[in-house]
Image (cartoon, rainbow, N blue to C red):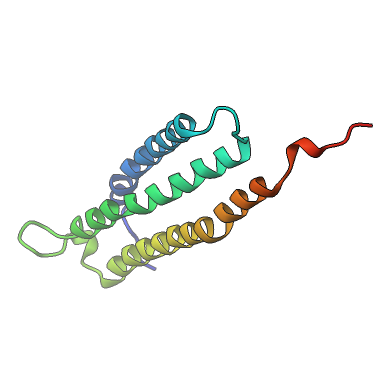
Length: 133
């Protein structure tokens, strides 16, 4: 098992965590600004915020990937001491691969299942036809 130094993971993933918070704030403000004031449902707004967050986080993985791969090398092109072991480099590549798989799977799930279900559910649901006894 390869041991990746904690400083490397912190330098790569702490900025991603900050970007995550900024993306959630942006998605919330964006969805709140463009939603209909009269015909808005809380569920559709939340699903829109989550979907936008997932899409933007998928894009935000690219700089993390580039940074972690380039951080393994010295300016002269040789690998740093901690990345000299091939298993360490493979561990970083696998970590990024699983992150990409997770985000792309979530994007496809939101795009082809959750968003259409939410849209068509609220389009067909008749809120005014409830009977009161």
